[in-house]
Structure formats: C-alpha cells, structure tokens
Length: 399
Image (cartoon, rainbow, N blue to C red):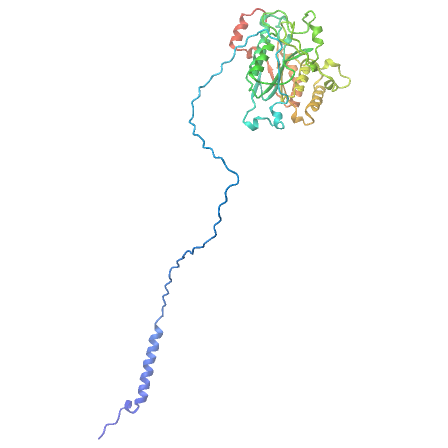
C-alpha cells in the first residue's frame, strides 16, 4: 500500500513561494526596525595665502637738500641762587631826570585782555590801605595837604607829620612791589594843587621806582615846621607855579621849596575836561581837591585808580558821577566796562571821625558806579611799622 504524499509535497511550488514571501517579510520587518545614521566628517578649511605681486615705485630724489644738524646733549647746570636785598634809598640832590614810559599798558597789546593771559604773567594784587585790587595799570593819588600833617591841636609838628610820613612810606612800598611789566603813576594833591610824578604812565622798572621815591623824598620832612600847601608863602614860588603848562610838559626843578616834591608839574583840567561841567554849577574850581586829581588819573588811561583823602570836596554825588562818566566816555568810549575802577580810602584825622564817616558815605555812590571798593582808616597808627611807632613816641608835638 503506497503512502499518500504530504501536503507540502503536493504543493511544493506554493510552499516555496510562501517561504520566500515569509522570509522577505521578515527581512522587511527587520530592516524597518533599524535607523540609518550617516556620519559626515567635515574637513578643516585651510586658507593658503596667495602671493600678490604689486608694482613697486622707484623713489625719487629730494629736490631740496636738507641739512641735518646733530644736537648736543647738555647736562643740567647748577645755578647760584641770588637773593635780592631791599635797597636803602637816600635822598640826593638831582636834576630833573629823563623819564620815558609806555602809554596804553601791556593790556593794550591784546584788546584789553592784557599780556598776562598770553605769556603767563599774573596781574599783581595791590593792597591800598585795606583795599585790594589786581591791576597792571594803576594810578595812586594821595592827599598831602594840611589834613595829613596837622595834629589834633590844628598845628603842624614832627609828631603830627608822622601821619603823612606813614602814607608816603606805604605808597613807596606799593610801588616797589610792582612787577616790571606793570605801568604806574602817582600824584600828591590838596585843595588847589595836583602834583603828578610823571606826565605819562611808566613801566615799573627799578630805575623808575627809584625815581619816584626820590621825587617824594622831600615832601613834608618830619622836622620842618612849614606845611605842604598853598597857605605857605614862598617868595615868587606861586607866580612861577601858576605859569606851568601841564599839557606842554612844563616842569619846575629849580628853587622848589623843601616841603614839595623834587620836581613839580601843575596839572589843571583842559577844555576837553571842563566841557563836561553841568550848566549852572560852579566854575573851574569845581574840579579841585580829590576830583581834580581823579581827572589827572583818568587821562592816564589806567585800569585802576586809588584815592586816599580825609574829606569829600566837590559837587554832589549824582552830578559828580555824571561828569566823571562823561569824561570817561570821551577817553574810553561808551562801553562802561572799559572804565577804570575807582577805589577810595577815607582817613579820619584830628578827632574828626564822624566827619570822615560822612565823607565816606558821599563817596560810596561814586565808587559803586565805577565798580570800585572803599575803606575807612580810623587810626593811621594801625598802618605804622613797629619802628615808626617807636619813632612817633620820641617825636615832639601833638599827634
């Protein structure tokens, strides 16, 4: 009995196909379960410089030859320090010295800004009996009449003269302390007399400073009984003095009385000043005492004016301010900022403190108008040195 063929035998081709199909299905399934990764490795970029040949220009020879000098090296040298001693000035008989100066001052070199701003100079500070101002063009006007030489008994004596002696010493010290690039002038005044040191501003050289000390060395010597002022009669002196013409530069050097400076100018306001008188006011005598001296100072074209007086003489404050303003406009122009500062020191003398205070109050509106400062000296002995105070005790008379 023969065996029946199996199912697979009967269907051999179909079985093979199925097996193949199953195998492929398994392969596809396995393949689907895998994730393909692709690793990309980047190579580093290397830049290789490529030589770029550029055309070269030939150098041309210089048309102008240049001379080169070798600088020598210098070593620092020690310098000997020189200490200047304060000169001792003595009065000597002299003829009128030749005085030369520069009008306008260092400030005129650069529109009023001054030379100091260009070359490192600093404007010197001047302490005028308590009034401090910086200035490179300054005029000092100081009372030298009876009010500065008489004592409380209304008589002049060596002790009472010590007042003006102190004023003169302090004035000399102010001038001697000025730097050489500064410009200065000075005048002594009393009622009808203004006597300047020079006709124009001078550079503060040692020579000009010494001339000023010599100029004032003879004014009111301590041991002379007579007093600087017109009330003192000297035969022929006033006739000669009245003939001096300030604007012509006339000067008196011979036969000058011992109470006056060594040489004399007679300042008197000219027509260009007198035209500013207010109609109805007094005649030429309005400009007397301190205000005549102030007119002299204004004509010098300084930037600072210092006045020392004991009283106020002249028109009332408002008319006087207006007249001085008008004079300044003629000299400096309409810009009031170019006007000089006007500074006043009022000194009390001979138990007249209240009178001096009233005078100072009259000056204040004028001083304020000219951007100045003011001070009050109650006792001139506060400005004396120890040596002067000791000498004062030894002198005869009444202070």
